[in-house]
Image (cartoon, rainbow, N blue to C red; front, side):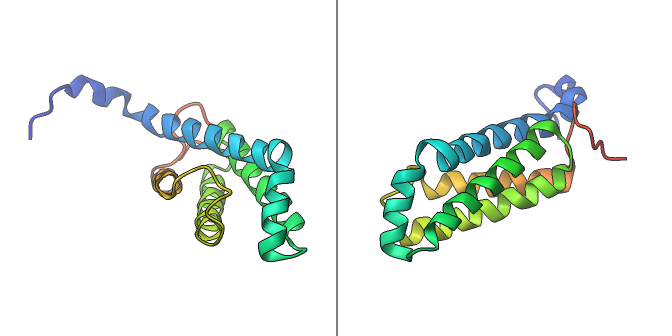
Length: 134
């Protein structure tokens, strides 16, 4: 099969880096929202639905998102960061299903994050990472 731009395949090692950066920045914005910006609103809506464990849940989600974003952005333990981001996405999909009014992102965003994380899990970290695949 002929390719339109076969010269671009020389740069394919940078494709996982772009996925890693995009997923890491999105997770970092989620972590900021859960740990700092939107914490009071999240607690108020979650406590009415889930009870007193909501404060721990919001803190737990923010810490998971922060760890996953740092792993993905630095390229250190990328596969572990990808697994964490899959866990975070599945939790957000579950929470969004029960409390739809609070979260601003659509389900498709979390499904795209799962697809990006699965790609990073299978292909490796790409360029500019500490854990280059051998």
